[in-house]
Image (cartoon, rainbow, N blue to C red; front, side, top):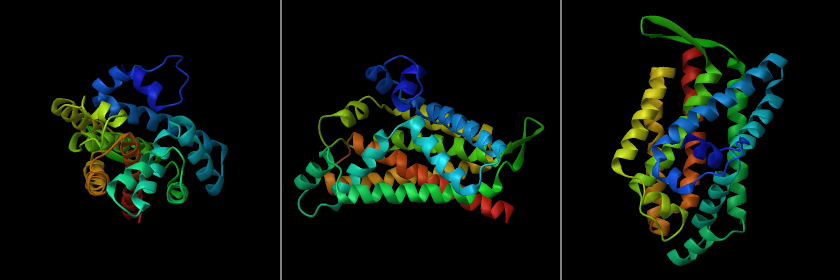
Length: 261
């Protein structure tokens, strides 16, 4: 089943088409997908550090690597979400803009601003490079690079956010969003949440609070979506992935600034 998820959520050439029904029924694997993509991104960052890439180019290449790996499916959802929010009028007009395949001015601006935000945060994180922090695990001192911790936790958090939004939301109508929402049961969400918590504890337990705080983002998105659209669809679920990724990275950057400051 994990192969199906990786086929759907990444551009890894697995030569297999993901089974959407299997993916929807095993949404509790989302945090695992996030952990895998985070590790791959770290490998890229490690290679860039070995080569000695300067901060500006490093940030640009990390951004390119991120979306080369994950695709732009969720970024497209981010643009559609902000297009819908920008429309003045009744709920019907907002939903029409949300579902419109053409990207509007508001959506384009939102995407550009989010890319600029991610770029600036990668740039701000660069000075920490391969600096390591340690924690006690099973009576051992385990040192891990800051970038490894940050990228993996960032991706776990963003994937968990899609589960959080889906579990607490109502669909706007028929479509991909409803397909996933109808198949996410309480036990699935609890498995997903527990998996994400366990992964973060194993990686760097002091960031557990950041994981939990980050899940307020999909809850805020849910309130906003209910007010404007009467519920969520696949685009909004995808948008929650992008927005939570950015907020999580911002929280991590704040933590490392305090830790090393």
